[in-house]
Length: 286
Image 1 (tube, rainbow, N blue to C red):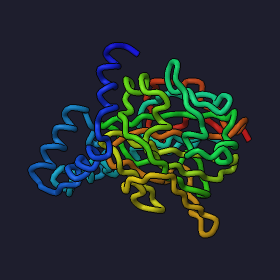
Image 2 (image 1 turned 90 degrees about the horizontal axis):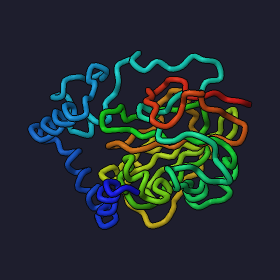
Image 3 (image 1 turned 90 degrees about the vertical axis):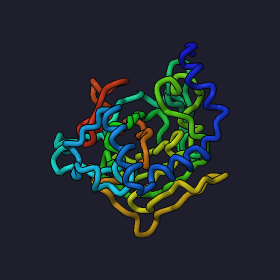
Image 4 (image 1 turned 60 degrees about the vertical axis):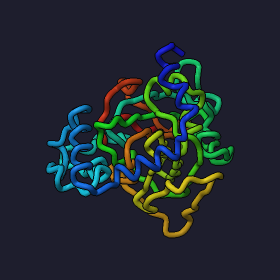
């Protein structure tokens, strides 16, 4: 850990993560026109948000900052890959890491990793299908499109809400906080696909405590003390590749997992690569 990373990260251990996120949620959902327009303008200017891609480009039309942040895109600006056997990117963002799941562990940063079991809520049975498989961790920055889409067509089997902290998920914190993505609050969705189970893990972060899915609505908040899960054995929704599956009310990270010998990432799909939702990031093997 560098001195700069330490100065960025160590104070976060002392912060009231969920209280700050509750306050930020109130601010981002505030419908005061002056406040929300000022906030929107600052984010657009500071991060270089490309509003030409948005379905609605007039900031006065957004009822709140969160409405702007989860904005819909114009048709055609994120074409879905047509490559045979392709896996589609679930989000706009940058690749934090991508690679193999080794002995049940996922690489986070130099000298740091976490287990699939911990990531998926502590169940070894839930984690077993992904041992020796592949993973990717994709970080969404404030300028990115914040809806999440299906990498492959799948039928929902289970959703899990895992409690935790809300550390930042920026690069400094990722390098510094052990087991970061298995410590932060998160929502896990397990789908059955043509190549077996696929896990999509939506990870919260500081000021980012609200995660929702298209089949459930808002999952978090509320903040919880123990893992809760939903089984979808009857009337389970099937979502096709490229279809919206959820969103972050503010931004964070999505982790994608596949089983052993089921999928491979493209040769150029590696850390720091900037990607767009719908483009090919890999292909299925089975």
